[in-house]
Figure 1: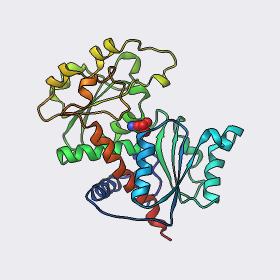
Figure 2: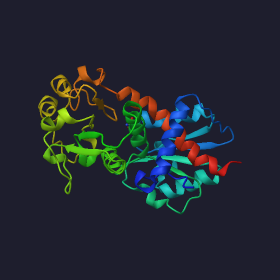
Figure 3: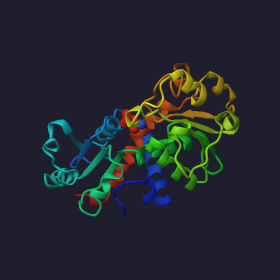
Length: 293
Ligand code: CP
């Protein structure tokens, strides 16, 4: 049984469904405690939701945790990620959660460390636990995935959430549509006019404009960005009566979603965050259970 979680591309569909089922069980009150286990949380890039919901999941499972603060660690002396993780392993940590700004940082660890690595987001690469919580939220809403139409809109090229979700949603039989301004489009993908397809969509997933990953500030004005590519009350009203709005957050209010829409009736943004705790409990259990002491 695989215990790492690098990318959803590397796990089979049965494994994925079983993670979602365990997450639902945890949400419904299932208890699983690992009080003699220690998980290291290594966040080399800022995070609120992923980091804090992993910590909450660890608390609920009575897992002990250790947080690495990169600025106060030997990373500032030039120590590598590999040596840092080997250090955690050597001092007795049972698994690590890592977020890094480097795409596929986990290749430096693959096959070289014996403790499970859970990817909390790698650069613009993948964000597997975000996809899992998105899928959990969709399953709760619609019961299944096959045949659902989803629009993913915004800063596609810099989004690890888009990269994870496009792959896994298509694998689960969803029809994925993309809309993005030209500077955020990736080659080899098809883009559509948001306003044309909006009324047919079951799910509209907006993406954060990732200003920090742009070499030059290409988008200057929130109002004109929102008018062309964002979600607002006009577009909310054009959605199907059963359709939902999602966003991985943090939200740039006023840019990809206007302030009045972030918490509207169709929005599942806070529900996504809540589900994040339960999918992280499920992946922690998956990482720890095979090596029970
Ligand atoms: N969605 C998400 O990954 O949020 P954080 O960057 O706050 O963890």
